[in-house]
Length: 150
Image (tube, rainbow, N blue to C red; front, side, top):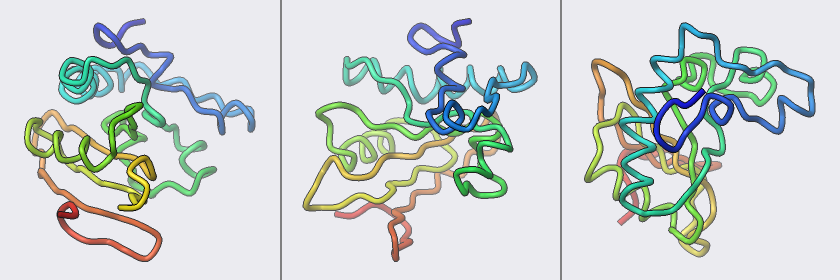
């Protein structure tokens, strides 16, 4: 099932950890609306702007998978509202800055980025139908700051 022009339901539930551990990570039907909204408002605009095919590193996580990877107890991944992404050839800081400047979002987190390795880490971004906070954070091993690095 397609969630948008370039993103599918199968992609939303894809997880190497789930496969290795035999966890059924298919998104339940009642979350399909959230997945479609995330695809439409976050993933498709990124795909269009950069003109590069990509697949999210992590999108939907069922409770069992979320616990297995040590995810936050109230992770928006469990509601289909959050994705972790990287774009081939695009520094994560550049992607995060573009999202901040161009998209409506709930939370944007530059995770485990390293100024010496632009491909380090990933970008976490979430979208809600209502009440987006536009919260921007940078998080690393011993770091949590508001905003993005200069």
